[in-house]
Image 1 (cartoon, helix red, strand yellow):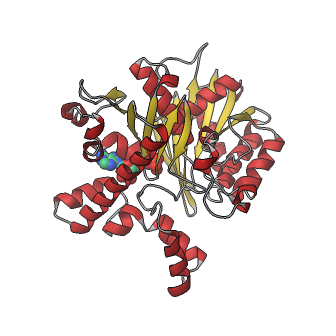
Image 2: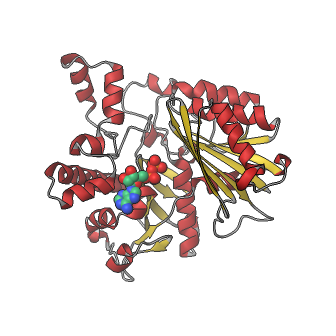
Length: 398
Ligand code: ADP
């Protein structure tokens, strides 16, 4: 079965074509075709890769025309991997917000499209782009089966006392609650961890640290997320590249009253110029923060220290929700690539009997346990593969 995956963010889109034979393989295969689009004003910067070819192209085209270009590249030119578009069996989409409505992946119908549209008020930067992708596929591939895989779904069983905010009771009926995000990655990494350890996922208590540009933790028990750090929006919880994470809500009232902030300036401040970038004044990229620290930059050091403190603080919160810990997982850009961050975080949890193997930690680990043999908690570094997870969901629903 050939599965096309569209994983659209607010300013970029990753796409992959996977082939799954009779069963989902034990280890994720490489896609047979992959593409990356960066949407810039007036131009789409496209990179396409197959086993034998690489193509880079800037095109001036609408969203739908760009998807048409990608689809054409599947069966034409140097990046051709199929003879005919009819070989594609199903198209899977990452959809950021599934609200209370969707607790698992679904086959897309007009009713599903309408609901994703209604949920756009909860995810204005994401759900509309996800819909554009669904509509472009309808336009170019006709009535092919499409599947929506939601970032919120994995968290949809978080118990009420952890999901409901301690504000107005009316918020519950207004849909204001903790939804959580990065669910596709949290689900993939925790399932993968159980496979790597050769243990039953249901018997493990895990914390997954997804540390990319956006950062969140999930506490997973019986294979389900039971707590997470992102909330009603992806702004809650950990300090991130350019997002503040949780801050005193009274501070927002102060800024609105005393400093003449508007919703737009607050949005911009908290989402785009806070976090590592805001505190360091240098960058939201952890590599640059670490580089600046090695040059003696004090604001970069402060940014790093806050980032680590917040991580330890929320791991503590997840520990309390889980009432114990068997596996700590690091994933995404920072989690997979920064031994410094992993060391700084783990250092605080020696009291649990958690001990890192320093050599393994520094040896570019991928999908392995980097805890010392005597450690009471396993520490895994896992390469997150959201697109593969989406393909697997499509396979199950086909
Ligand atoms: P996204 O959340 O956009 O999918 P990624 O998961 O790719 O992002 O993470 C991107 C971030 O990963 C970068 O901003 C950078 O901070 C971090 N990163 C990548 N490589 C390294 C590295 N070698 N050391 C530290 N941080 C890294």
